[in-house]
Amino acid sequence: MNIDFIGVGAARCSTTWLYECLREHPEICMSKKKELHFFDNDNNFHKGINYYRNFFSPCLGERKLGEITPRYMLYAEAMKRIKKEFPKLKLIISLRDPVDRALSQYKYFRFNKKKEPISDIEYAFDGDYKEDYVTKSLYYSQVKKTIELFGADQVLIIFDFEIQRCPELIIKKIFKFLDVDTSYVPKNIKERVNYSQVGFYEPAYIWAKLNQFQKQSTRQVCGKNYGVDRCPSFLKPLLRNIVSYKIVNKINVVLDENVPKKTGAVFDKELKKKLHDKYFKNDICDLEHLIHTSLDEWKEKYE
Image (cartoon, rainbow, N blue to C red):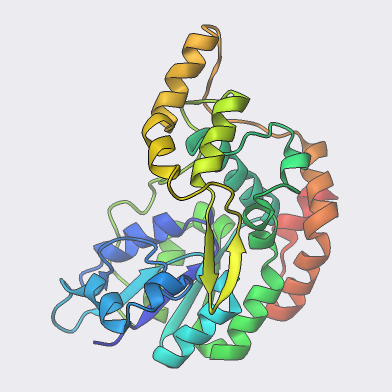
């Protein structure tokens, strides 16, 4: 069984929309679940390639096989593993304004996952989740290494603003890249999926801190440690039973009957420009030159 394509990044860049659209196509079979984290997690990788292939066991016939794990592109070691196992497969990279992507990740961790205790965004961006907020949004080196490893012909880069503007055109482009019927139109092509923060309470600091404590973990990619883990393993099951986003929501209501239910945060332009200039401005320019594509759609918002 050979894998034909993988969506390798980036997180919070319409990858769930992509997964849902691809799995509808009759000539494509996606993995049983999104985000297998096989190549970027030593614990999974050492289980062997048959363990990985088992996620595609329902896939029969001549269909194209694929999966989407947005974190793969972040780690050069993971990409090398993919190259060694499937040297001819195609890669899809989905990108979004790095500031918006980073803020979406922050909202997801704070309001949905209830594991970000810091309300000051600038401070949070240099905290325990800096890799998730900042490093994941620094696309240049990730894309550069991917193209150098696989070759430009095996890599398709799509942009979130293109998906929003004309999803039908982008999905045709993707289907053509994968060499499947381009006339097929997925039912959920205009659906918004896996968006962050809608209908959730902002967590009280103490409960978010506890949730962060029990959810933090390290992972190894080719023996190198990533992430932060401060919680002893024996405590995690206990904390998991008393700290969850549902419980935290209820606690917030008890602590403050007037706590507002978040239905969508709007970050002011000054904050977004500050984050852009501090972390992403130069990286965007480098990416433009690398892929020979204008990114004025991103840059003009911060001029």
